[in-house]
Image (cartoon, rainbow, N blue to C red; front, side, top):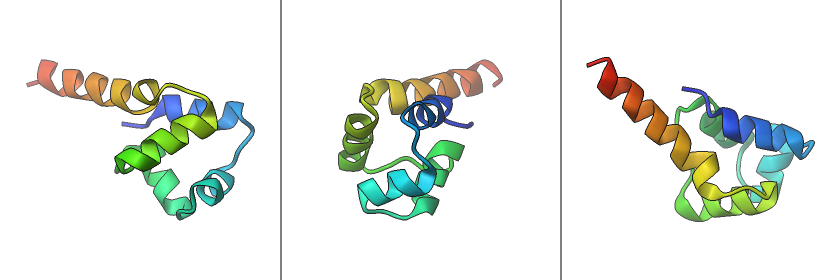
Amino acid sequence: MKNEALISARKAKGLTQEQLAELLNCKKSSVSNWENGYSTPKLADAFRVAEILEQDVNHLFLVNKVQDSQTKASSA
C-alpha cells in the first residue's frame, strides 16, 4: 500500500525523491521503497524524514501501517 502521507508531505515541501534522499544521505531507491510501501525506514531515519518534512512521524509512517493492518484483518 502506497504511503500517500509521505508522498504528499514530500511534494508539499517541493522535494523530489532524489533531493530527499540527498538530505537523508541515503539512496533514492530507499525513499521510493518507503513511498511505495515496500519497506519502512529505520527509526532514526523516520524521525529525520519527519523533521525535514515538518510532519509528525506517526502521521508519516504509523498511520499508514495501522490502516494497512486493519484492511488485512477485515478481509480475513
